[in-house]
Image (cartoon, rainbow, N blue to C red):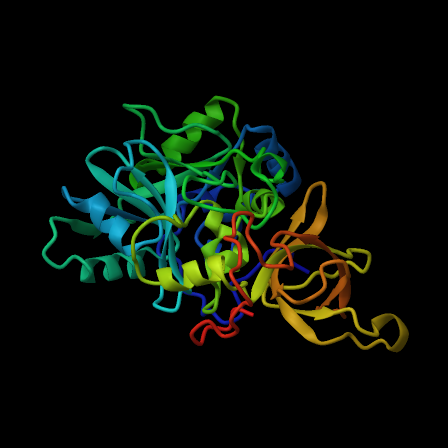
Amino acid sequence: MSTEAEVPADAAPEAPRHRSPLLDRHGAVAATGPDAGVAWHYGDPTAEQRALTRGGAVVDQSHLGVVRVTGPDRLSWLHSITSQQLTDLPPRTSTETLVLSPQGHVEHAAAVVDDGEATWLISETAPGLAAWLDRMRFMLRVEVADVTDDWAALGEPVDAEGEPGEPVTWRDPWPRTLPGGTRYGLPDAEHPGADRAWRLVLVPRAGLVDAVRAREAAGWPLAGTWASEAVRVEAWRPRAGRDVDHRTIPHELDWLRTAVHLEKGCYRGQETVARVHNMGRPPRRLVLLHLDGSGHVTPEAGATVRALGDLLTSGEPGREIGRVTTVVRHHELGPVALAVVKRSAPTDQDVVVDCDGGAITAGQEVVVPGDGVSVDRPAAHGPLTRGLGGHPML
């Protein structure tokens, strides 16, 4: 059975906007779901993953979308309508931001970098993001363009911003807690993502093959999304295209580290962000599952996660507590998955995951603690208020 994760269970897959020419390589196996259009692997996913982990590989990420925002008001405008502090973002300094619904649910996520003349947003929902931004321009001096047809992204295991004269480059800030952010999980230095270097380099789409060949000539093999996703899951790094559903708030994925500034002014969804951080608790939490691979079956994304219950005595698993979001086979950890489960589910017990070949057990590795409290939560002045204005935070 394939270990590649599919799109979330409540999302409808769409045809890829572009089919990468690198899929014509000998041995290339096409990815599916949100990674459709690029290669899952090129014949040896284990070797590709090891090369990426060692810091010497290139990953085709040309299925990602690119939105370019120009005009003198671009940064202050983006600051006012998204979750991140962007007004004074220096050129060639990477960050990320979220577009939230009025209820605080994640609608769009974007990698952000400004080159001094334009702000570049790399997103899995570029058409929808560009359309929403265009509707929000009003009379401001900004222009929004979906430039995905012209630009493609390459992933590199490099921990460096782009230099002047180099292509537009976004360096992943995860898991560093950025100014104005906070964390629910481990300290930055102890986080399993601390050693993961990752950046996206934008190249002209027409020159994608040549850009890859230049890196191969320097000794970097081409790797597929099996490798990049395995490294991402190991680092507990949330991804909008796989780990987000219509109910997701950023606290549940520990995304306040890098994508939310808690001290900035009002933006859509900010009230929920502040209430959950200051008074409430996220209703769900991200967890890494170490799947039992002895039966040679693995779940699909969207699979039900259940409490262990009486599985060992009666053969019946317990109540449903969540869903798998991403499934990978890591070259060292074996089969692992990210899942979003009820915050109230015990953190010290194994769980059961539904599979076509029969339910399997999985051990939990806590990403967001079960108490649902960030490290810098303000001291309570009284009993927590249930409901929080109708949002089920407890």
